[in-house]
Amino acid sequence: MLPILVAIAIPLLFLFLVWRLDLYASVTKRALIVCIVWGFMAFALSYGINTIFARRFAVGVVLVFVAPIVEELVKSLVLVYFVRRPDFTYFVDGAIYGFAVGAAFAILETPYYLITFQSGLALSLMRSFSTSLMHGSTSALVGVALGKMRFGRQSTRIVSLLIGWSAAIGVHITFNRLISQPLSPSVLLQALCVGLGGVLLTALLIRHGLREERRWLHESLGLQLGVSHGEAAVVQQLTDLGALLKPIELRFGPEKRQQVEQFLRLQAQIGLKHKVQAMTPDPALREELADQIVVMRRQVDLLRQAVGVYCLIYVRSLLPPNIESFWAGLATRLESPRASNVDVWRSLGQKVDNTDKATSELTL
Image 1: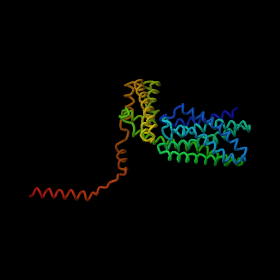
Image 2: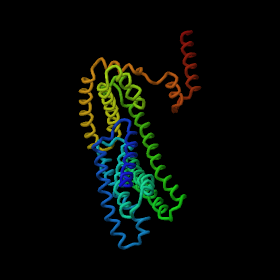
Image 3: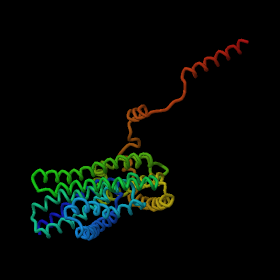
Image 4: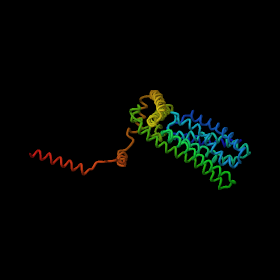
């Protein structure tokens, strides 16, 4: 019983850690549950399809070449659905959705493997830190590819999906070829490196996406969205949210702190949705996003009333309205390339000629 519990707990733990990286809380619990449920269904579908192929081909061929293709395609179907939804913001969402699907897939696959081969705790730990994490990481790669090219045309989306599938299937085939060899310390170490390395890569991609989203917020947040300069400054510093909200909790209590946190995250989501709406080429999706933004603004208004004027003034005072120093802004402007077609010497010569001409007229 303990090996099975370990095989379930470890993927769930890593899924929780990956989900916690979602700084702006754009991935809802409902969407996460849908992905987990689909991961369970994907295991059942893949098992049935792999069984059919196993009747016609050698087991080694199915393990190394057929199963990776079947499993990655089936797992990613829910990602293809989500990427067309207005709830999907950027590839950060895709990475988390994908990891959730893969983790759920492994939650059923590893216990099935342990029960079938009557294996113990050592193999359970080994598979949990290698195979299970590999499943989550490969699905995350597909989610990243879809989310990264979400704002392209239809042909671009197809290409991005093919790239994501190729990367995921390639990693999966390499991993299955590795573990199909006789087990040795070297093979086990390489398998662990693939599993843990995949999680590290997923985390790095999410961090990269969050930096991009922060740049979006810098462009989007402002008076046109009903966000004051002070609030916008705080929203853009959500990486330090715990430190920012500690004075709120000390002064107003934990309940008010929770309301303020929800208020700030919702404002961040509005800024991101506004940017996504401007970037998406699909008119129908833009309209859905506009409706969603209207609903979210109403929620912000309700939260603003619940938080109260005095507390909001205190929130706005946590950071100065302009969080970028003068020297940093000056350096950014100096580093920005500016194209110029103006001939300085010709312009100066024309001004000298005009001056001489004016002087001559006055003399006359």
